[in-house]
Amino acid sequence: MADNKKNRKNNRNKNYDDDYNPRIRKQRKKVCPLCGDKNFVLDYKDYDIMKKFVNDKGKILPRRTTGACAKHQRDITLAVKRARQIAVLPYTQD
Image (cartoon, rainbow, N blue to C red):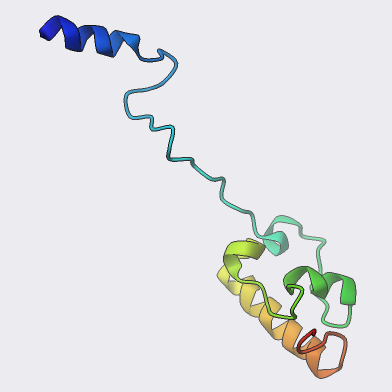
């Protein structure tokens, strides 16, 4: 019986570590687009920049989707709301 366990352990792929589980995939942490690129300016009057942070229905995308840090997500939210106010972005899209 001890030989059976030993053979089973040796039959595993030797490239894997003992704590490796192929069902659990590690995801890379997203880098904040505003922190990562110092030249990137969030301007509420620029439609092309604002549409990156809004989905097709006009909702503001969450942090897990945009990859923004908490500070810049608040700035994004404020900019989108300002863009809606001056009619650069629609409130909803039907």
